[in-house]
Amino acid sequence: MMKTLYLCRQTQTPNSSFMTNPFFTERSYALQLDQNDPLAGFRQRFYIPENTIYMDGNSLGLLSTDAEKSLERVLNEWKTLGIKGWLEAKRPWFYFAEEIGEMAAEIVGARPGELIFTGTTTVNIHALISTFYQPSGKRTKILADELNFPSDIYALKGQIKMKGLDPSEELLLAPAPDGRTLNEQIIVDMMNKEVALVYLPSVLYAGGQMLDMEFLTREAHKRGIPIGFDCSHSAGAVPHHFSNWGVDFATFCSYKYLNGGPGCAAFLYINKKHFQKEPLMAGWFGYVKEKQFDMSLDFEHAHGAGGWQISSPGILGSSTMEGAMKVMLEAGIEPIREKSLKMTDYLIRLTKEILDKPPYDFSIATPLEPSRRGGHISLLHPTESLRINEALKARGIIPDFRSPDMIRIAPVALYNTFEEVWKVVQAFKEIVDQKEYEQFSKQRKAIS
Ligand SMILES: *Cc1c(COP(=O)(O)O)cnc(C)c1O
Image 1 (cartoon, rainbow, N blue to C red):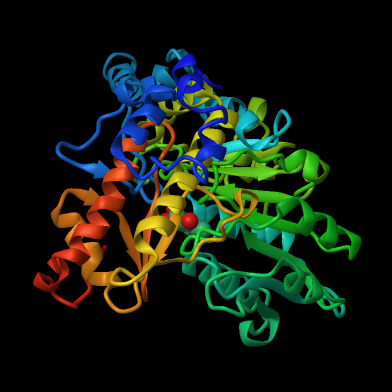
Image 2: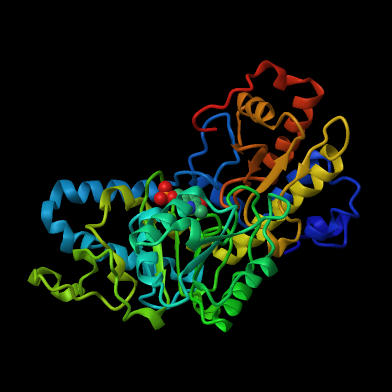
């Protein structure tokens, strides 16, 4: 939405005016974007590490005062209620996973009962694949891709072995012709009669490409193949419409754009057409809720995503999600996506204008079309990505680095500003101008 301030100087929206506005490389332009940002107020509700420009919300989102309050309340409930907290806490712990699932449903387009707040991403992958991977006859293979997150691939290989099969035969990885992006048509062409299941990421963790989940789902279903997605790198930054698209199952972590905190529980989605399927990594929290405490030895699973729960929910470590989700719902996932795209667009255009030529020579690994990118942009330097990343950190800028040469920058709609994006680009420029990176070692740290 345009404010009058804008109309004085230009006739287009900020987003489309980059090309035509000769001042877009100036700081004042960034400040103006911030002034016109309808989500600007949300930043105050987050703890921003001191003297830091935090551009790493795609790895670990920041703490909000709302999330902090939920955690404090639950800690206090444990203190004052003891075991009674399971039913008498403000949000009874016994129903916490279901209720947070209901809260989050609108950000991924889930219907009632299809989303549960449980487990962790990799555990959920195991729980889901054990149900959805049922090799039979000639259909024995899982189709994934070679740019997938390692943990997901380890889980798929383990699941194949658990069925008594050989991962080197049964796991197909769609190739990335340029080493950084996938081509949906290549993936579709690999969906042949031997494929029992397709499992893909929504947004690639390294290069930031977003796959067309609706298209892939439609194509998989045309060939009679169930399909699931890991949405860890898109949930909270991009709206999803799982149920409308017909996605069979999905999971995503809650500590990236969802700001749940390190190790917070993840989400698990099951399309309701599969509610009767059997959760094979069965546990007592997947039991029909009203009868769980009958303690029967015959497993009767809940007909809903809740049936795929395994253990007692980690109430303390996950209570933050209640407050974090409240903030996200207040802002709304559509406005969040709109601002996120505006920020990454700004970053792309500044990069192209300032950094995409000698002596800087940066390039962008992420697809430039809005519909093909998630919330982060990956920049590459031909020789010095690792040390430039270190130099950014020494300046109080937190990006992150993914081997061998990607610097990921994630401007997060809820707490980053356009001015910060502008400052990051200036920092890239100065680090190269002054050869600041030469002070740093070429050795990689354990977590970068
Ligand atoms: C962050 C992320 C994970 C993390 O898995 P955990 O089990 O939560 O440690 C897994 N897969 C993808 C694609 C991710 O982005």
